Length: 430
Image (cartoon, rainbow, N blue to C red; front, side, top):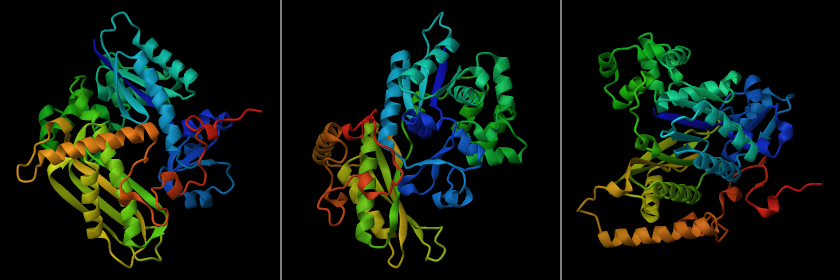
């Protein structure tokens, strides 16, 4: 029988920080968003204190002045390197896998006759903990939705020894009955609200609905797939999850920004990251959008937010094209007289790069190949020599004469060293 495993890092960002700070184990730890704006990751101890995800940092300081809470700025270079090491171990120990997010991977467990898959999961947890120092939770089940559910139980109940296996119908029904419908993978907030209105409180309630009722309520293939998987079928294809349907890169600024030129430089950097992510997953975007917003916490200032989008006749992932579209959008949404705190670039209508439908009115095959070769060279150089070695002129910050890296332009007052990727930050022993 074919099984799937979900390997999920426990409190990923916090666990990364604790690898080199074992003195923080058992103590409240939080990690902040870009520019130290709000809490994005919490240790279990921080959650027990009542610290909520998304809490602004200034409120954390006001509400918990006497608690000794370890605070870290986001250190994505460290998190990326440690999670890459975890993924390398998973790849080595698995028949097949694909990475779902920075801290999570799906593993396909087939052709493993005679293998005790519960033991396999517990052993994998031990290897990752020993070699990287990061705890993971592993859920195993006959389909991906149930495996996600199993990983939740593995994370929250010690008796599973970090690996929960749902391999019988009795276990499946028991797991569903204890699982809130809001938490089911694939059930968004709007779906959950709809289900609550008709008395569906948990996953078993939803799974017990008739197929005709699900079709009539949602008229959506994803909702039906979730229902089928909760009933034990394996029907969510790998490609549904392997590639993102939208890509967003956004940041809060370090301070307020009022002038258009500075905002355009930030947006140019966001656009470059979006195009890089598109190429990395082999996709192209049919729509690129830009949003800007003021600081909602500054009630003493004028408030404004807006969004504009550009539609390509032929979907693209070219750096120059994505940037040009983003610049046009930011000029549409910018208004003088406001102090902006945040902006972002979103790629939507994403298609597989190998199956793009070209438009004969604007498609230039020669230019397409030229842009493709250019991006390949840029990506290769930036991969070998570190990110942002080569950038567009639009990405340069005023007065520098060069493109500064993100760490030089965003606020990170509590950032830990890059222990594993920089010789200057390597840990020193007495």
